[in-house]
Image 1 (cartoon, helix red, strand yellow):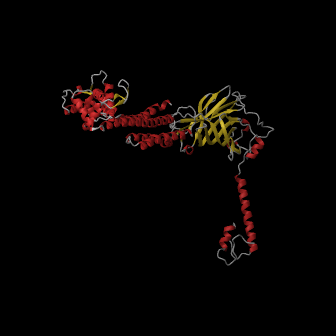
Image 2 (image 1 turned 90 degrees about the vertical axis):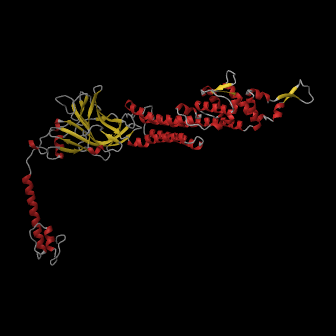
Image 3 (image 1 turned 45 degrees about the horizontal axis):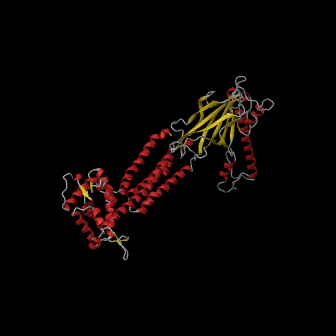
Length: 583
């Protein structure tokens, strides 16, 4: 036999190996194997005897249970301890039970279902004088007795506390413990994951604040037998003590801020309410949303896409496809953002700040889409009016000369049209009184005037008569301006008065000093239309009114939208920020 690692004589490390494994001061290299074994055995036996003697000398003298197992046998013997009877306080008074929840982490907040999931330790204290024992200062052997929850299950009385708003409770793979102090105070600690129903106030979303509640009560003991209160609190209704506490590590949550505004005091008082002679203890966990995610992923994109919708007002109205895309796509995106919001929150009738903001911005994008429709209607009408001017300019040169001549003779436009209007005539072989046919007038045939040229002149006559209400065959500046809009011509009243006077002077007519008092006849109005393109070079009006009068409806639609939409967006954000406290 030889020690493990001991080498035979002649090897270098024989002495070192011997010394490392045998409790002797020296180990000769040449010692026979049998002698070595005897020496080692004697040395080890002497060491064990010395240690046993040392333990016997240092062991204190005490009375009472020396281990949890002996405590169970002596104090929890069913013959002397009835676990079905509650410990009484001050004679026959109710048993006082204190409770506290230590938060380990806020695991999940199901906003749609209103369920909060929290992990931590539920601690319960009560005093059972039947379990009291002497501590070491009073001759006892222990200062505290600690058991696992399973060891004392059914062996001692424990309060039947349930969670009133519990959805699910999980203790799988977790442990519980029971500690008993010398004065009989019992502390039960249970590690668990709780899912509790909580009414979430989402009105101020994403600046919403909530209070998760754990409502505790005794299942079978009323206030005459059991009083429930938070740790360190007072018996009876009201706030007191520390109902819920948390360490610094438990506060780290990327989505929620726990205990907002509490500084370093990470705890909340418990609230006791007495209902029908029953104590209900509420442990409260306040938490507030970190708004950055919803602001950056929902609100800011919605404002940006409202801005994209606004860009269409600066695009050429003639570019219909581009404007249609800018008008419709933001509306679809806004609806998608609203849908993504309601995938996270309840789809009920609760008013929410963020939802109202999205609805307002969606309304802006929808109005922008309707503005595009209105713009196309205006453009179609303006195009039709412009076509009438173009048609008037295409009439034959001979017809234009006849209009100039009639104007110089002082004839009105209706007279000219009547002169060249078709006349009824007799069919060959019929009597004159049986006029059944219509043909060109002799004057039209003589002057080579075509009826298609007279169509545009007839339309000018109808427009003129529309504004010549008194039949005087004259129109003043404001009437002329309104009549010109039927031909797609938009000009301010000042510019129009100047243009009319210039035109009249060019054809040899005198004009009043006050240009706003000028008037023109129907023939002059027709001639003005044919020559309006010669008088279009005007400086920009100096007044806002003049500038707006010189723009067609399609441009006015864009100008109005350019001003109203950004004001609406900014105004909405300001108003909603001011209204935030009222949500």
